Amino acid sequence: MDFAAIAKEVLDIEAAALEASKNRIGKNIDEAVEIIYGLKGKLIVTGVGKSGLVGSKMAATFASTGTPSFFIHPTEALHGDLGMIGKEDGVLAISYSGESEELIKILPHIKRFDIPLIGMTGNPDSTLARYSDVNISIAVEREACPLQAAPTASTTLTMALGDALAVCLMKKRDFKVSDFASFHPGGSLGKRLFVKVKDLMRSENLPVITDATPLREAIVTMSAGKLGNVLITDKDGKLVGVLSDGDLRRALMKEDFDLDTPAFAYATKHPKTIQDTQMLASDALRKIEEHKIQMLVITDSENRPVGVLHIHDLVEAGIK
Image (cartoon, rainbow, N blue to C red; front, side, top):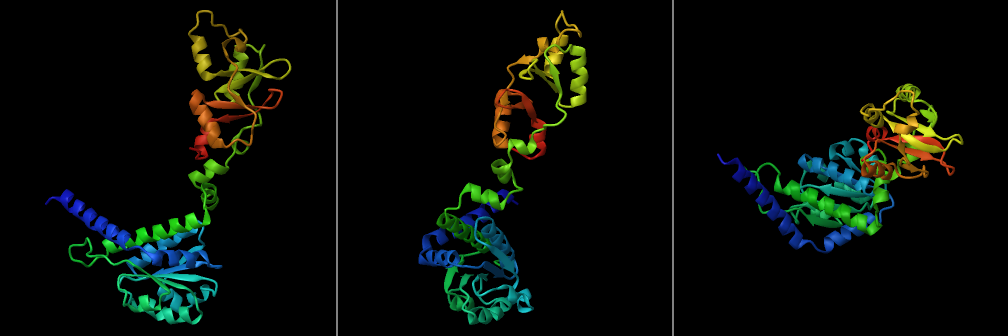
């Protein structure tokens, strides 16, 4: 059996359903967007079975892109959760047949309070379509399932139309990347946009030595500091160099290596520094990667070290 051919056929069927839907999109999308945008409350998404699973994903997408939304199962709504739908809310109901029993039972209650109703159904003559203020067609010519039993092309189309609505609303609200990050502060995007150098820098017990400190003492300080580096300052406390474990290994290869030599002799002079602790941690990471170093030193306006930002801290914090 040629499973690759079967998989391609499924994708062809679902792609055809998406293409057909694209060609019939019209005012109903405009009207649905205006209804949702005009809500003072939340958008409640509801559906049964596979439609419910798709609806749950759609509600999550709406909520994360600026449209307050959550999912309610029609059966739970009938047993008390209808009270969660307020007069300033709207409802997006999904049913391919438009006749799902559990869903149909709650429609009169929704309309009794003049709550806007957007339907998504494959049958324009169905009960759901008749009750809806706007109906978005999710009709497909055929399902990808060979038995024409399991929702496949229709659920793909429904989810895609949900994404289309969410994107339209993002455009309508002028929803920016910073807004998205605000809804995902713990995600990678939120971290890139909100976590700053000051949030991750180490500022206590810094491994600092003077430029006259012999290498043997520098090694002890390096070990105690657990950064693989020591900061070297002059007599005024200003940063003049950094001795890394890499510098130390290279020093060991020199013929004139001497533990009593000042560590500064083997150190990297003019190390990479920043002063702006408000800099985004992601920008600091780019500097570290650009210069192929492990650590940035944070200095004050007098070039005195006040902290360090190590690549390991950035990675552990999930900064990318």
